[in-house]
Image (cartoon, rainbow, N blue to C red; front, top):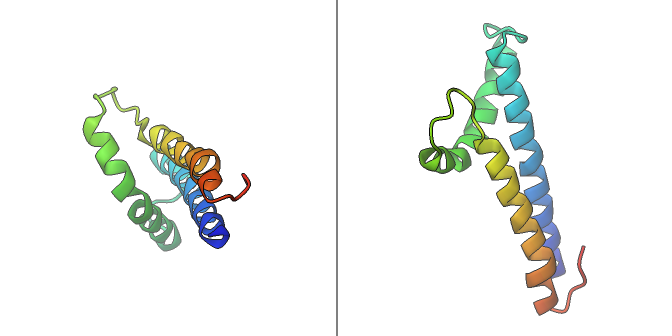
Amino acid sequence: MIAVFYTLHAAIDIYWWIVIGAAIFSWLYAFNVVNSRNELVNSVSTMLYRLTEPALRPIRRFLPDLGGVDISPIILLLALTFISVFLNYTIQPMFGIGAM
């Protein structure tokens, strides 16, 4: 069981950083800091979009229009943090595993 919890925490941590990277990249892309015609930039953009959009789309559906400000990554990061803390302090003690 310990391996399952460590793997879940690692996956949550990795995805947390992917969401942050996607948010920063979207700002760079929106403000023309990166060259949108570059093939590498487009492939990174596509990869980050495909990794984060399935989790962000349902959140965006319920958020009101804030005039071009997208707070869905913040809500997703809060949800990932909640899941991580829930696993640490609620589920792990049920199996007799110390908190990470």
